[in-house]
Structures are given as C-alpha cells and as structure tokens.
Amino acid sequence: MKRIVVTGGAGFIGSCYVRYALKTYPELHVITVDKLTYAGNLDNLKEVDQKRHTFVKADIADAAAMEKAMEGCDAVVNFAADSHVDRSIMEASDFIATNVRGVHNILEAAKKLGTARILLVSTDEVYGSIEKGSFKETDALNPRNPYSASKAGGELLGMSYFHTFNSPVIVTRGSNTYGPFQYPEKVMPLFITNAIDDQPLPLYGDGKNVRDWLFVEDHARGIDHALRHGAPGNIYNIAGENERENVVLTHRILKEVGKGTDLIKPVKDRVGHDRRYSIDSHKLKALGWEPKMNWDEGVALTAKWYKDNEWWWRPIKDGSFKEYYKRQYEDREKA
Ligand code: NAD
Ligand code: DAU
Image (cartoon, rainbow, N blue to C red; front, side, top):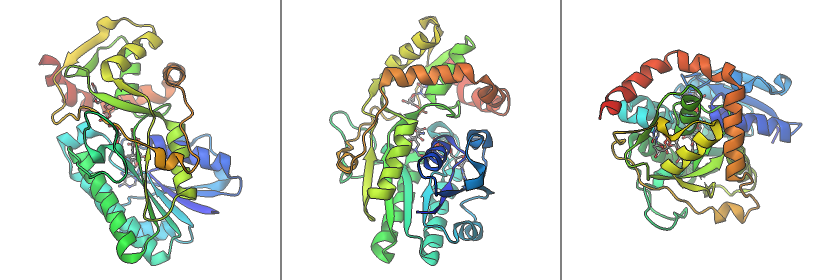
C-alpha cells in the first residue's frame, strides 16, 4: 500500500493511526480527511512528516468530496464518527449523518473507484451489554444507545456491500480506548484533567459498570493488522483485556494524579447505561496481533501526558466544552 485515505485522522485514535502508519511504513503517503468537528484537532498531527501527509478538510457525508479525496488511493480507513455516547443521547442526528450516511458515501466512492481495501473502524458497543463471558465476532448485534446503533448501521451497510458488490470491506470492533490526545469528554481524560484542577469527578450510577481498556497505540496497531492481514468480509474484535469497574478506574486515576477520593462525586446514571462490555479477540490474535500495553503503565503514561500537555487540553476545556459540560452535568450533579 502506497497511498491511503484516513478519514477522521485528526481525532483521537485516527491521529494515533496516522502517526503510527507514517512511522512504520517509510514509503507510505497518508491523506487525512477530516471535517474538524469539535473533536478534530490538527495539533494531534503536528509531529507527522508533512512531506508524506496531505490534509483535506471535508465531511464524509459529502459524496463528491469523498470521491475526489479517495481517487488513486489503495485503501481507506474510516475513523470519522460522532463518537460520544452522552452526546448521542442529547441529540442523535449528526450521528446518523456521519456514522451511517457518511459510511455509505465511502462505500459508494470505493465501489466506483475500485479501492482495494475498505476498513471500517467500529466498536464493541454494537454487541450491547454482557453479564458474563465475552462476545465473539459471530454473536448477534444488540446496540442499545443511539451512538452504538449508528455504528452498527454503518458496519452492517459495509458488510452488505461485501456480500452484494464484493466490496473488500473489513470491520474492526475495538474496546474502550485511552491514551494521549483523547478529547476530554470521555471518562479517562475528563477525570484526569478534573483531578488536576481539583474539580469533582462525576461518577455515573453505582460506579460498577465495567469497560475493557485498550491503549490507543494497541488499537491503532490492531486496525493496521486487520487492514493488512485480515480478509475482506471479515470482522475482527480488538480487546484491551483490561476490564475494570469505573470506580476502580477512578481510584487508579486519583492515585496517579495524587489527589484524594473526596473528589469523587456520584451523580445520576447515564440513561440506558450498558453494564459491561467484553469481547474476545482470538481471531485477530491468530493473525499475529496482541495488545502490548500493561494497564498500570498505560494509566501512568496517560496521566503524565495530560499533566505535561496542558497546552493541548486547557484551550479545549476553556472553550465551547464549558457549555457542553454545563448541559451534561448540571442537573446530574443535583440528583
Ligand atoms: P474522536 O471523536 O476523537 O474523533 C473523531 C474524528 O472524526 C474527529 O477528528 C472529527 O473531526 C472527525 N469527524 C467527525 N465527523 C466527521 C465527518 N462527518 N466527516 C469527516 N470527519 C468527521 O473519535 P475517536 O475516539 O478517535 O474514535 C475514532 C473511531 O473509533 C470512531 O469511529 C469510533 O466509533 C471508534 N471507536 C472509538 C473507541 C473509543 O474508545 N474512543 C473505541 C472503539 C471504537
Ligand atoms: O466501548 C467502546 C466505546 O467506548 C467507543 O465506541 C466510544 O466511542 C467511546 O466513547 C467509549 O464509550 P463509553 O460510553 O464506554 O465511554 P465513556 O468514556 O463515555 O464512558 C466510560 C464509562 O464511564 C461508562 O461506563 C460511563 C462512565 N462515565 C462516563 C463519563 C463521561 C462516568 O461515570 N462519568 C462520566 O462523566
């Protein structure tokens, strides 16, 4: 592969993927296509070799723009999405526009242009909640919030294009991802940055919901592994193998930032809050991928990154994020 389009490459995982791919493949040229929503940030791509990188500001929901950007590429890797569950609960229309219609445009452009690989980055949330055991790729989908339903819609369209048109579609389903450059609406960077500022950590419900934590570089490598070694028409789970209750994660963060548990503020639960996510990634492991980051090291590294890089997150938290935070947490905190 000489030329790949990475949609959503200015976001958290997408930018890690762009950095990883350019570092790993010296001959590769990456075209990042990103709408630069509130979550997109060109600072995330500052350190990449710009000679082998082209940035195109475009919306994946714009069919003509996608066709133009993808001309002559060997593969497209789609990260572009509205990605935050709480925002999808407030208002879901952007989620449908990007996560479903946008994916459809990518599939259509790839069909017309004959793109050799289409990798759709999806999520473990499409399976829904599981009390015991772990979901395999063959298990039924049961998405239970507007975000995960829109992601399921996008990947189902992708698989339908494989079956109907023989489009070379591969889907990955990753678990909760953490690490540097994550927008501070998600629990890990929100709690780290709130703790740095001695602000309350709003823990939903009883704090016993379980998420499986995957370090961002492990996720990026997993996606690249599926792209290069996976087979079209296949789905690959990418698990972190670090399941933790939210309350355990919260204590770990506070320890790392050096703050007390008095900062924990139990608040009203997320509606439709999935209790536990768990996936089995033996299928991708059989192709030679495995997660490398140890949990304690990953949390320490992530907390240190936020401590050392206030230039990155302070302008975000001081800007329009404040309005979102008020809307999302004000009433919750009263409950
Ligand atoms: P993010 O919100 O940090 O980044 C999303 C990026 O997509 C941003 O740069 C944004 O500007 C861009 N974007 C949004 N709408 C767009 C549009 N219409 N056209 C072009 N660009 C658009 O998200 P993330 O956490 O990096 O997630 C990346 C992908 O991985 C998403 O598809 C998400 O569903 C999936 N995923 C995320 C996680 C996680 O824990 N963060 C886990 C599994 C899967
Ligand atoms: O599982 C993969 C998914 O992980 C991705 O597909 C999504 O894009 C990503 O946002 C993430 O979804 P979650 O809803 O699991 O992540 P979030 O960081 O929002 O929440 C993680 C857990 O922490 C969840 O159980 C809710 C809880 N939480 C979250 C926030 C923001 C809190 O207790 N307090 C909070 O303020």
